[in-house]
Image 1 (cartoon, helix red, strand yellow):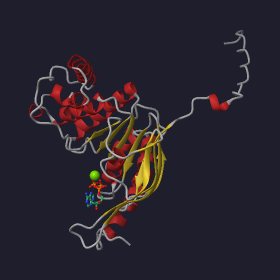
Image 2 (cartoon, helix red, strand yellow):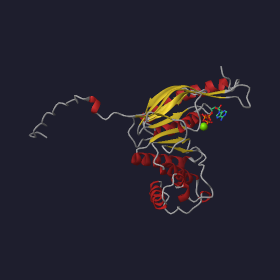
Image 3 (tube, rainbow, N blue to C red):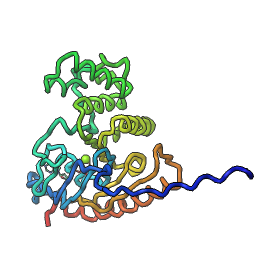
Image 4 (cartoon, protein in one colour):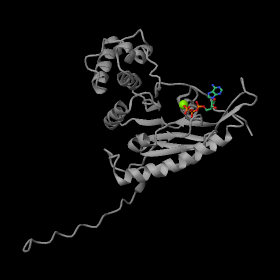
Amino acid sequence: MSGTKPPAPQAPQVTDPLPARLPQPAPLIVASHLNKTFERIAQEHGTDAVRDIDLTIQEGEFVCLVGPSGCGKTTLLRIIAGLERPTSGEVTLRGKAIHGPGADRGMIFQSFALFPWRTVRRNIEFGLEVRRVPRAERHRISGELIDLVGLQGFAAAHPRELSGGMQQRVGLARALANDPAVLLMDEPFGSLDAQTRNLMQTELLKIWERTRKTVVFVTHSVDESVFLADRIVLLTARPASIKSIVEVGIPRPRDRASPEFAAIRQRVLRDLTEEVLRGMAQQDRPGAVE
Ligand SMILES: Nc1ncnc2c1ncn2[C@@H]1O[C@H](COP(=O)(O)OP(=O)(O)OP(=O)(O)O)[C@@H](O)[C@H]1O
Ligand SMILES: [Mg+2]
């Protein structure tokens, strides 16, 4: 390329004299000194499920919670949902303490938890009916969501007529219908076959990119967490406290076969395995509160 003029020197980057005006990531959910002990029911001791969790989740962030079975993941998610009260500490959403369930948090369960007697459309519209949204508006919103989650043609079907993946799409659409600030997802793809699960992960990311919802996603699968998350919060064996936080930082769509993906998977798996082993060693004294 001889003869072409060298590019003009770039103007030096001017730093904003008022950095406070730059868009800052805004904290959406802040958990402070969160503890949860279930009082004893059948066991001899109570169960310490969550211990001293401090966690800030930013607006629009995709966070995965990963930890050994029974460590307290669902309990933590249910506290954020307002379905469970912490024993001490608190969780705030946009600065307001959470004291109960609210339309600003959409929960999606592993078991789908759809109403079997309602059609797809009427399952999706449930929260809107509760909030007395007029019929035409409900219809418009459910129609848009049916398109968004790829269930065109199934509006009048009942859950028993749908595959597991399709039922979970209804669960997602139902949670999105209230336009929540955050989606709380508890192992939503845990019961799907591997193929459908991978497909649903890709679909979820597309929906997340379009809606920019904040997502808190519980999973047992390290692979799933590396594929989905901005940050992976690794929890210890029960009681759940934070063992490590991993920033994934790989641009999406992510290639599961890439060396960067493998490196992060390895790192998370190492921490998780340590905790699984520690949890197994504890099993001689299940639930004991020290
Ligand atoms: N309502 C409850 N009453 C008493 N104990 C409970 C209750 N809910 C959960 N626990 C106990 O708290 C601990 C954590 O349970 P949790 O369901 O949060 O774990 P998890 O990490 O979601 O497990 P999994 O990976 O199997 O879904 C368990 O020992 C469980 O028995
Ligand atoms: Mg659970």
